[in-house]
Amino acid sequence: MKNTLYDPGFLVGVTKAGIKGFEKEDMALIYSETPAVVAGTFTKNQVKAAPVILTAHRVKSGLAQAILSIAATPTPALVYKEKEMLRK
Image (cartoon, rainbow, N blue to C red; front, side, top):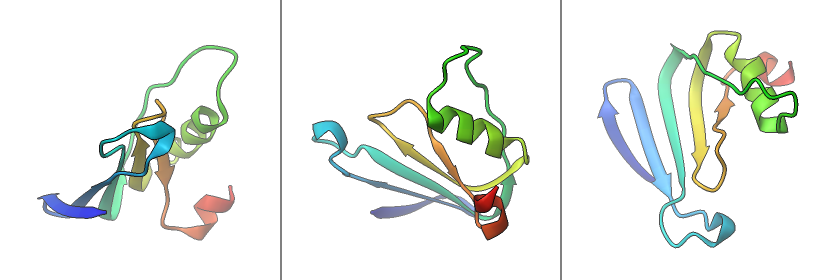
């Protein structure tokens, strides 16, 4: 994964994961050196994919330390540093 510093305190990396056969870089990780404020907007549909439900739940805490985004899917997955947050 290529690492590039875009803004002090944040690191961004992109890579070709090969998900769904993409030939280009299709996965990105945005990492904050400290927990950062996070917000999101989500579908109001009654049927939601598991990543949408999980991400909406985790965004409620108001903090995240990383965002993993995969081009083959529309929903980024939020990654938390604290183990307690991962267990919720």
